[in-house]
Image 1 (tube, rainbow, N blue to C red):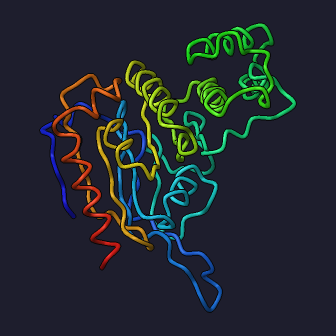
Image 2 (image 1 turned 135 degrees about the vertical axis):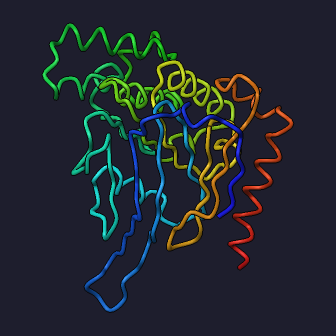
Image 3 (image 1 turned 45 degrees about the vertical axis):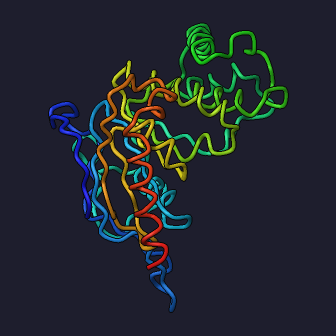
Length: 271
């Protein structure tokens, strides 16, 4: 496995909230044609760290997230959240999908308050919290709009606010910006990086976009074709403001990382 180091002290990301050891997933074990999707995969996610996972389409990236949050059972291996084995979605973890999945009959504000309602937070408190979150991510003035009246970028912002409303310490994101235009994606990436880094949250991002992965992340993990194994880990050392996606992309090192990761993806594809 290739490893490109950034000379970052290990103490920067102590006490990892997530440790995955020798994870394996096989679908159809009881059939004549079982499919091994993930094989012997181990990784960690440190406190305050942003890690992106890239790999070929169909290699098992989304399956991996579903295993981590307990939506699917593991065939073998171990997932430890905060030092303990997880069953189901840990309370301190938020999961955001590529689709915004906003409820069309609820306004942006009431979509954000949904999880808070489930947790029985008083209406005045949850409404105030949702308003602050929507304002923070640039939806001031759109609190009472229904999803059908919002652009794709606005809906993703509302979905992000909904994910943040329960104050997760760890965010699992499955290509949340894939369907957006470049400008909107860049703005949301900036917002995401600022939120995560300023509040020392942890982020695990699944993406097909190598440039997105490099500009956002402290580490980029490259997976092989199915069954997914870790092919390489790149520790990203870009000496700029890591909440400024354009500055990261303009760094001389940026293209070096992108080319290296793409070459690994292409080599495996042609193998």
